[in-house]
Length: 452
Image (cartoon, rainbow, N blue to C red; front, side, top):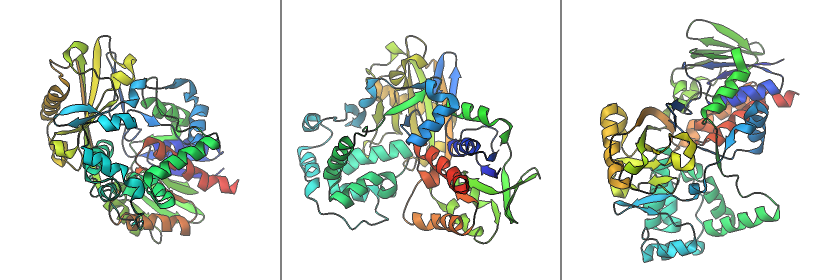
């Protein structure tokens, strides 16, 4: 039975460990923090359920879904209400519904007539040269025009990753859009062709968003329960050394373990100090140079009558041109009404990111005051909140910027040259929870399944 160490107990590490169990391997999970789950954290208190990190998950790869079902989560999955299809955007200081159909697009005040016409010219814009370092902003302006870039792509990037669209690489943020352009010559034509082909193959056009009955924390709790004593929290790994036919993993408390392989599912920043004693190990310090954004989430619960806005959508996003102090706000109690006490609503605001990095250093009281002022202005949220939870995620979101491939290259080189090593996590697999989980699953299979 191969023994595999996993460094990091976020979603990637725990999924990798569970898959190793299924493949009759012995996983040993080492987590530096005393808390498991990485960016997934669910608060349950006094009838409130608030997500401090991701609120929902995109339907994952079928293999990930099967693993979660086998882990006992099949009966725990819940879907948001139909309001998830609606989203607001701050425009001229007020929330405006994002267009969902061509008819909505014609009427929306978010884009001027000239902006709409420029966007509709996209199928006739010549295909680009597939620049690996092209930013989201440059891609959007080239294909759709300045208004769409500033009013739609800008808030979407900032609200989902805290990134600056002028720096974040489009091939990482929106790989499908790049693929559509390169294969079909147009994003719009490529998207239509892709949907048509999926229908002909009888494939579902996306499984939508989901969560668990008691929040995404259930995923972490259930996987940790199945892994049992194989998970060792509060045990930061400080050194991994090569030995005959395997590796030795050393933790900060002086303990060590002999293993046949190692899956690094830790944050990129860990490679700044993590000592890898084998040829090429020092080069992985380049991973720690990946730029990161810091986010602050503020969950505030109000009595329903104290919020003027109908909250009939999934949330709102704020373009940088609007000068708001928040990046956006989710309406969790609209999507999952059972998560709040009767007669109340929950709002979860996101602040900071590359747009406002100073927010992460403000006091909790100042952050709450700032967010309350924004929600009062945008949504008519008045009165004292009945629930409040602030969470800081410092340097938590890796951002792919120019030179990203070179930063990742040493990890890929080690995987190719040394048996028994795999690297995964948000910095490698993608920011979304479903991408992170798939990265962990594939890392486990690549180490163990080929030998079976």
